[in-house]
Image (cartoon, rainbow, N blue to C red):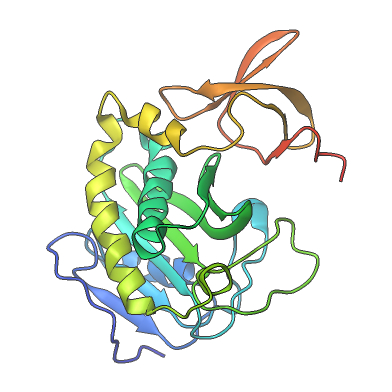
Length: 249
């Protein structure tokens, strides 16, 4: 059910139109439906609770009701290098968390997980139904106090790390503002360098998707992970990255 929303963001771009659901299966599913109805660029679907929220690799995204930020944004824009959109979104989330809690140990995990103290506090999932159209799904753990056992990556929240609750509407506004800043910067000459400065694992031995192990050399101009092994260098555009020392855990 769509509800009257306390969330707002004054912009002619992202967040100019919002559909806020108390409960739904997933914000991306609702965004797809809206897209078929003619959703404009920047339209946002927000949910207090998702019954079927998804993360990368089809993993379930666990979130207590009305505690976190769960959104999908409709992006209608021809991007010269769309593989950089996940990185730009990660930069926006990183800066949002940093603005709220500047003393926390915030890093990025390639390609677009946001970590605090090595624990996952935000994830990003992007679908592209057609050329020039992207559904940018972002989940940020804001006020969640407990998480289920057995999750693939140790989770955390802004509440658990800072010891205080946060206004989800404030997180929402900050995030959209930072997305407005970072998406246009994707073509900047120093974009990859700025992203890499925030990235964990560079220069370390890592394993990609439990298969290839080598030195994480850096990130390509298209956003791929550059892995150096005895056989040479390989660029990955998808995969789950772990430090080699942890890959057998």
